[in-house]
Length: 502
Image (cartoon, rainbow, N blue to C red; front, side, top):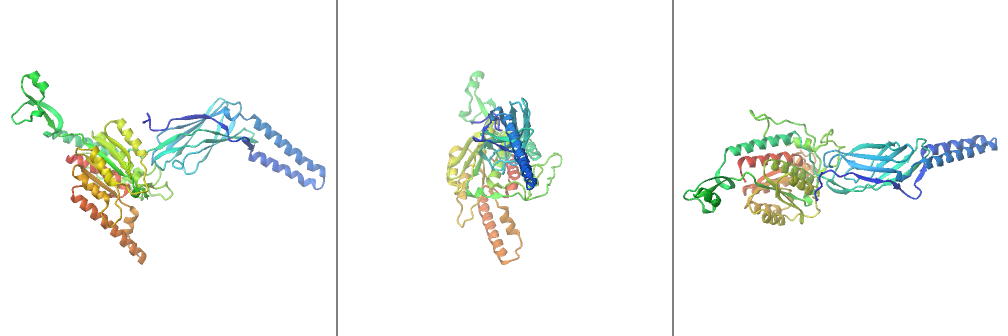
């Protein structure tokens, strides 16, 4: 079920007592009670003065009880939680908490919103003053860290009057399921990719290839040698002579995004800090057809935060980067007129979406990517290959994002890729681990570092050999660090479109 908007809807509920005895003294009243004990000091000389301590403490307790009775009941306070935008990775989500005070007293509120760890590591306490018959609200921001569906908890409230001698404790059942999406940010580089796609489309329109493909182009008179199956009998009946259909090469191809959700995609990768570089523009065009992959690191980093900050958010998994790339490619492919499908698999098929067009189809794809989960076991690559060949019998462009297992045998994913190459154009993307690459390039200073560097170089050499053999079979191969994934894949997609390889 697709919601009209991606961001969660508002939820409203009345407060209820946290327990049977949901009230207590405040630090102010406790401090006043402690002050009363100072009456014991003169009581050492005159016992009658000790009674002043009892009188003071009794007076403080009386005023505290009266102050607590003046407070509105929990049911007189109503809370609402609303979301300003859809929770997504690498973007801040603004949450608004609203308190409606139907009592007769101004109350000072302390709110604690129980959100899942995927949204906030530690719930914070917020202060708010609620006036009678007036709606009071506050806003705060969170930065999601994990995709998927997550349940929110209760909203906890501690409120007191202006005297601040007693307080009551309440909670509101603002429980709802919140879906966190992949990174949905579109910046300047996305606009450049769209401009490049528009230019390629214009070039293809100027170089039409008639007679090929199955897209209808025009009608003409029948000529000797034309296929009888192409005769348009309705036009023939109107004109009194044989009329045949003329076709052209398809401008809309099917693009499948295949995501490996096995154990290799669970590893987390921190974004290294790299300076922002601007790629040179092509002379006479005003924009660059190629985007520097290093700009993806900035696109995946939150606003106002360096991509390599050690105190930043939790590093994302390889599958998170793959989902972000899938959203970006789907947007570009749909803009280019192609149909986009999705196949996410682990030991079984997690998500399957047939190729389609339009904003509603893009929303379905984003919803499906938000629910993709990395599994602890090895993915069944051959099963995914068989499923894809069954769902897509005609030639299509396949983007397969995966990783290569470090084994002495030939990985199963390579066998599956070779099967796809018999029918489709395959863009095979292997996501590397930046730490292994840095170890392989580092100059060892100890024996232990030397063995580690040798092992890393052997792993890198084996990956290069496997990808080279796959390239010999006709696949387009990329071995990329996660931060360079999106830009490189979009550039390669535009190259495929420009060369009309599908």
